[in-house]
Image: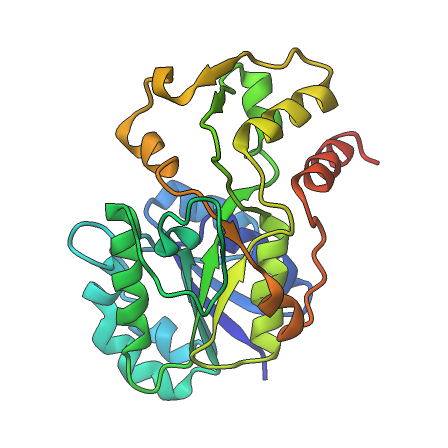
Length: 286
């Protein structure tokens, strides 16, 4: 029987997954907020729906797999607010469900290591919302839910290379600050591997092997492009927006052993250096 994925909030990450699944003959039903974006998705072979708007009841009934990439807001998870009862009703017919969360649920660890057994301790409003959404998804009776805590996402069109070319890259330095990150194609392969090895209730950190200060990534990208390295800007002088500053309130290193040991994943891009080089090579057709 053909597998059918209902992807709610079919954006950058879910589209990378869809490209992988299409080759295996999957049907992808993807939602987006606008009719224009729906037309774009349809051109890529997605059975596109505009949501909120379209009735997703029939799609839920047809789906064998469910993925939500929608961020919670001040009122909670909008998918569960609108579709929680329908998802609960559809749960017995689903082989797998996935929720894309963030490593922000671990909060600030002063650069220390965390893994999936580390208690959540969000330090930001955004992190609190994610932790509450995770709990809400996991509370749906009979739903074969898997939670994926994503590190900072980069990939084609969304990397330090693009920011440097656009002249928007800033090398902000906060002593002791370290982030984990992940290439979008590695997220896609983790999700696909989980679909092949369902383990309802599982939580996975999705990140690469090399947590690093953000200024190091900008510097390396500049060297790859042969561009001047942007000057260092002390965090206190950066005049960041509240949203941007909130990312610097958390400093931690995230372990990824579980995706390797439980899902058999071998990262395509185990660190930012190989990931940025691969993006540059792809642009040149190498």
